[in-house]
Image (cartoon, rainbow, N blue to C red; front, side, top):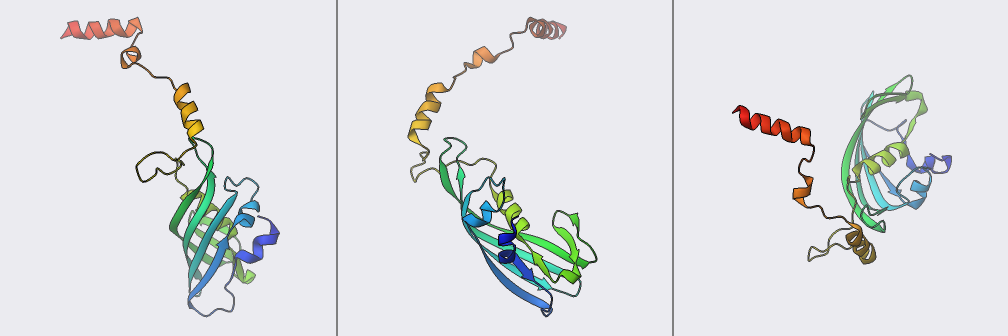
Amino acid sequence: MCVRNAERYKIPFKGLKEGEHTFDFEIDRSFFESFERSEIKEGDLHARVNMQKTPRLLTLEFHISGSVRIPCDRCLDEFEMPLSFRETLFVKLGERFEEESANTIIIREEDGAFVISQYLYEFVHLALPMRRVHPDDENGHPTCNPFMLKKLKELSVSVDPKETEMTDQRWSALKDYFKNAN
């Protein structure tokens, strides 16, 4: 993460009273540009972080919604993918930084603030679906690039189910053996 954006995504916990506190963050193009290998190049997301502070624990509840621009797995054109999700991160206050588990970390209490940019980045990327394609229109038709859809159809190979049957004669012989055994 570039230092230029670190201050924008910092939660200062030192000096705050125990109880609930709310922080709002905007996640945009400059945020994703700060990460060299981000597959997301553009986004317009809002993150609301509700923090429950107790003497030795910060419970951060992330509510992130908006959209990101990503390439379609089918036609490779970019499209807007809406996202809306929640994540929870438990931050224990201790003497050194340590990741206890996927959603529990220990940070140095003396730092007085916690930069959440890496967690925002990871949460957004993990919220992306495995298959990323343009949504269908109201009639159920794909909204992908028509030229690419035509090309894919031209280049696709149709397979006759009869051709996919076992052609290895050794298996055929075994199949005959088991038929005769009964």
